[in-house]
Length: 228
Image (cartoon, rainbow, N blue to C red; front, side, top):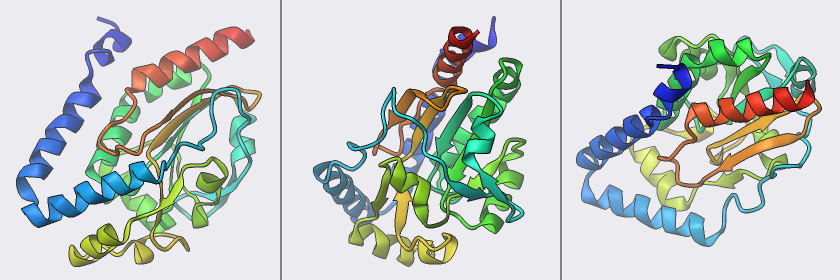
């Protein structure tokens, strides 16, 4: 069985569903109600509706790797097609499952001349922790102030109820993130061709759902074939 056919069985989706069921069983009813209300608020605000789409060009940005070294997004794209996944932070269990799933297909991404990068607003020290915790071997970069996320139309401020809930849980994003306060990126995956054009855009405010890695990989393969 090929790697792609194995991933098409919905491996990541199944893991995310199991994580959601576990979370729903652990949180008290009042916390679940706050989360539900926040989800509705974000949908009403149409968060993510203005995100860059297929055919748009990837904006440039200066990001920072886990050691604090600046990394130009255009320099990465100049080396070939990219799969870019925006995640909320290493504190998010759904994000960690997604990052591990992409690590599993990293070899095939590279075999097709592509690169994989993960981007969050967390400080470089937190990115390093995420790398170590998930045994990642691809770049995990900091988007200070969510500047790139804003340029791509996927940045949003966490609803006040969730800010208070997170604080009650001892998780202050204002401390974890690099100059962003309570702003996060919508979990999103973009596949970008070697000329900087977006060929796949998956943006969903429903943070428990993520694109299956094989779908991003398939778009990358098509982009490479089209440019050959």
